[in-house]
Image (cartoon, rainbow, N blue to C red):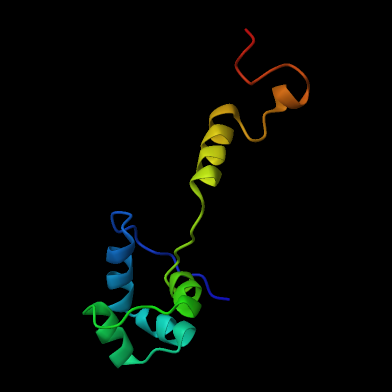
Length: 99
């Protein structure tokens, strides 16, 4: 599987899809979804939607990964307290909590 580094586009799915579908990445999307140029044109103009069985392929082909809010909240907590906190693992509380 080839991974493509994507340029951040304001974090909006629509903008990321439009940028990907109008760049050289268009070929990866076509291969992943089975779409041709006319499907992509219709999708970009709002004349065609994405069928439920193609959502994963479309998102994966442009580097979008969906996660739940619960997952993001947990990651934020782990980043704040330290996912690999040596102090906590040794029974000394959270890192930085002892002077």
